[in-house]
Image (cartoon, rainbow, N blue to C red; front, side, top):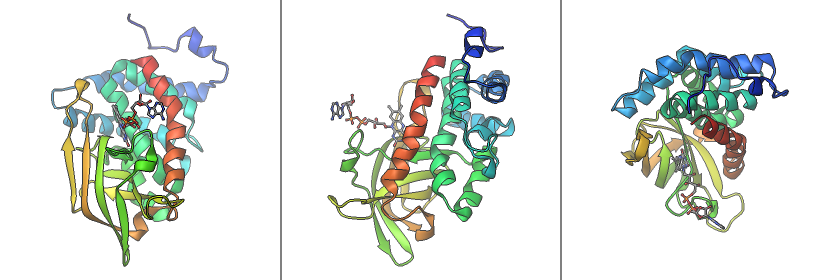
Length: 262
Ligand SMILES: Cc1cc2nc3c(=O)[nH]c(=O)nc-3n(C[C@H](O)[C@H](O)[C@H](O)COP(=O)(O)OP(=O)(O)OC[C@H]3O[C@@H](n4cnc5c(N)ncnc54)[C@H](O)[C@@H]3O)c2cc1C
């Protein structure tokens, strides 16, 4: 089935909760980028994705996933606009849609829970598309059941030392910055998980690519003594589950919107 998406359909416009600003930013602006994004599809999907992120940054589409205080389009992220953009971009190219969505998923915790330094260091580059973002939660023993999380972050002076393995991480092979979750307290304790900002080029971080259908850049992160300054922790020790679920709950409805576009 082909659909003409140049203009919002009557059905879309009849969704009374969508005002003109949301339709303009969430539907027409991503639509104007779609053809150029599709033209970037190539066999090397890692390079394609990086180029698509850059394109979405240059054309202002990534402003949808940040708050105005960090250069975003709306005072606070408008989830209706993110839903529209995921549907619109997903219809054009699943890879282009992924490029958009992961910039949001990977940076949302920094914008919501990060301090001024963390936000200033990463969010301008996420917004411009210069830095590719990722969200690293899942592990071999921790998917639906996050109680199985086994990656540890042990305090050592002003740093944490991270050890463990993350799997099924979108953008693992190419990401410049990850929101990453690790245990700062023993199993069984309450508030045992904390969130960290980890650069993709951190010493001790090994990234591998997992081949999947459709060229989705996804893979593993192995952390073997990765040193993260305590200043790169997001929120307080033990806030990790709140950060992770706060992010996932926000993005969950937008996954359905993307599926409408595919
Ligand atoms: C394309 C893709 C991209 C991804 N990108 C990321 C990413 O960027 N970052 C990240 O952190 N993770 C990512 N993931 C991982 C994803 O979040 C996990 O796959 C998800 O959390 C499920 O975990 P699991 O695969 O271990 O499945 P499991 O938790 O083992 O679940 C397997 C099945 O069992 C069912 N199940 C589980 N528990 C119960 C229960 N108690 N009762 C009944 N049924 C149950 C589930 O519904 C599912 O059908 C990605 C996954 C995919 C496929």
